Every structure is written in C-alpha cells, then in structure tokens.
Image 1 (cartoon, rainbow, N blue to C red):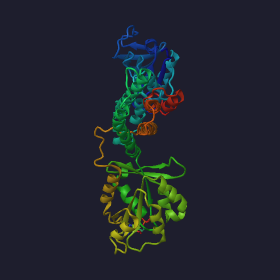
Image 2: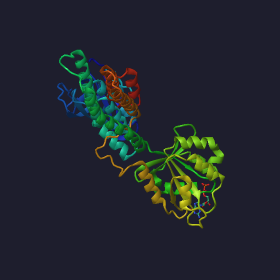
Image 3: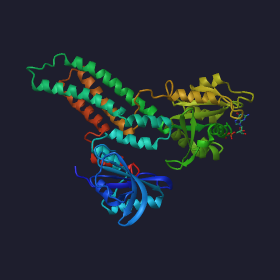
Image 4: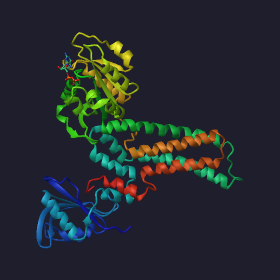
Length: 457
Ligand code: GDP
C-alpha cells in the first residue's frame, strides 16, 4: 500500500533533556538523507536498519541541531513502515524547528494516533492492541498499567481469536453438512454443539464480569458520601485524604458541575463525587435535594453512609437508608468515641449493609473500612495473575452481544430448531467478536478510536 510520509513530535511539548521527532512512511529515509549529515559531514547514502547515527540536522546549509537518529526499515518498526526517530535537544522551539524541516523536505504533519493507526492498518497489531496503547499512556495506577500492557501483548486478542476459531468451526461444519448431506451427517450434532457452546459461554461470561472490576481498577470507584448534617462526613474525608495527601487532586468534574476528589486506599482509587456538596454545605441531602442525592447514589459504585452514633437516628437518616437499599454501600457508625446511642447490630439490621464502627476524630476503624471496600470490589487479592481483564467499554459491549447470540444458539438447539438457525446466530457472534480486534470494522469507528490519541503516537 502506498502511503504518504508522516511526521510529528513524539515527546511532550515542554522543555526536557531530549525530544523525539518521529517520521514514518515511504519517504522517511529519503527525507532523512536530505537533512542529516554525519560527523564527517556526509549524507547517509546507505541505510542499514536498526542503526543509530550521530550527526547534525541541516536545512540546506543551516545547521539546526546535534542529534542521534534511529533508522528502522519496515516492517520491523512500530508502524511497520520505514521509520526514523530523531533524538534532538528537547526544547520546544528546537523540536518545532526540526519538525518544520522534516515537513519542508517531504513529510506531512501526522494526525493524532496516526502512527498507531498505521501499525493497525498494516496488520502489525489489531484494534484491541492499538487501544491498549492509549491505555498504557494514560494509565493512572499500576493495575490500569498492568492490564493495558497485557492487552497490548495480545491477551485480549488471543482470547477473542480462540473463541472465533471455535465458532467458525461450528459454522463451517453446519454449512458443509447442509451442502453435502450425503457425506456429512448432522445426526446428534445438536448435543455435540451444546457441549462445545457451554465452555465458550462460560468464558465469555467471565470476560464480561471482569469488565466491571476492570473499570473500577482503571478508573477508580465512583464513591458518594452521604449523611445528615454533622454526622462527620467532612471529618471522614479529611482522614481519608490524610492517608495519602500527596496524590489528592481536585479536578473540575468531568460531568456537569460536580467536583471529584481522588483518594487511594490500598491500591484502589476512590473518586469521591461532589465533595463540594459535602464540604460546603451542612447537609448533602437537604441542600442538593433528595432527587440529586438519589441520582448520585444511582450513579455511584459505592455509597459511604455516615451515621452519628451519639444521637438517635432521625428522618434524615431514614431517608438515606431508603435511598441506599439494594445498593453497594457501607455504613460508618461514626463518633464511637462518644457515648453511643445507636448500636452496630441495630444499624446492620435496619440497613442490611455492613456497619463499621469508626471515629473520624480519633481516626479509629478506618483500616476496617479500607479492607471492607477492598473486599467489596475484588474477590481475593487485587492481582491480575494471568486473568484477562476487559477494561474497554467497546470490548465489553461486543462481548455482551456475542454472548447473547451464543445463548440464542443454545436456546435454538434446546428448542429443536433446524440447524441453519444456529449458524445465523453463530455468525453474528463471530462478527461481533471480530469487531473487538478490528476485523471488518467501519472506517468511522477506526477514525474515532485513533482520534483519542495524542499526536506523535
Ligand atoms: P459533616 O457535616 O457531616 O461534614 O460533619 P463534620 O465532619 O463537619 O463534623 C461535625 C462535627 O462532629 C465536628 O465538630 C467534628 O469535629 C465532630 N466529629 C466528627 N467526627 C467525630 C468523631 O468521630 N468523634 C467526635 N467526638 N466528634 C466528631
């Protein structure tokens, strides 16, 4: 495939020790030959792949910078095309100047994600691996990083490919038998198919359920703290924040006007939603209204309900108890350093949730809270081991659809439907799974995925 040659600054646009300009495409080497001179002032007349050359970048007679260049001949490069990386001094002006020179001599500016898109279009990586590149770059914690690295190495792709192979085998068998009934018999095939479907369905169910853990792991647990005025919500926040003050950041919320605060507990990120509501008002429920509190509770992965143990429950507490029924919630019985009016047992019975006695003032019981949260979101240790985790919503959606198709096949077999019914749903599962790795996906989707990248990647 003939492509034009693209170039971009691959490192951050800020002053740093080294900056890298990346060039990829058919003219990558000829552009380099125009602008690079070795220490002896010579052009590179022969390009030997995977070499590093020391010398200078020139625009005509003007010397621009002292550099190291790496040359990689396709397909053994990131994009699978001829690629050059110029290591220059990492000043913003310098990087821009070199990029301009590269463009002057025949490359064009790359679009965001275009290098990775080429790696995908050239078949070096599949779509799920390309998406993992964004994951690796944007990973906010070690779990997110680990899962992206494993996805980049092909863990998700391998699973998907295996499932597709199994499915296409069944489709091929049915189609051949229907074509050639004299030689291939479908007698007893339904039973056999059921036996083959079951492990596939189980595997896909597991992958789908890993997606929720995956999201929590990579993005953090959306957490809402509820409680009546003076129950101790702010004090609790301060204790939790105090655990790791250095990494707490206030960011303007991604949605509407909410403010999120990020807290790390034993490797899990809690994104405390609407801390403004907690910190600036006396009472979340009263100030923001029951409706909004309900919405927040609906959107949250976790609700922490703070109860004042020193005074009897009031209607505010009752309202919240109703709100959190059947939700993932932990109840904190706070102020246990004072004389207690409300007991753990009573509250447990009343709310149906785990109740943890704490004192925000004396900072006791906080560890139990951390352990409880950890066990709520992870079965066993927080560790991937070799398990594949789905962290991408697009992948999850595809898996859910493919799973539904396989369940339909199972139903059709059980209902004694004719065999050609099976292959329609099998085919759908096969195609939908293919979309995860980028087989037969629409160009628009590909463009959308790569537009999320930064330039130079
Ligand atoms: P909020 O309105 O729910 O945010 O409650 P605050 O965190 O502002 O706390 C209200 C009052 O209760 C403050 O005077 C706190 O010092 C006090 N308080 C909070 N937690 C405790 C606790 O565990 N023990 C005691 N004795 N007082 C507490």
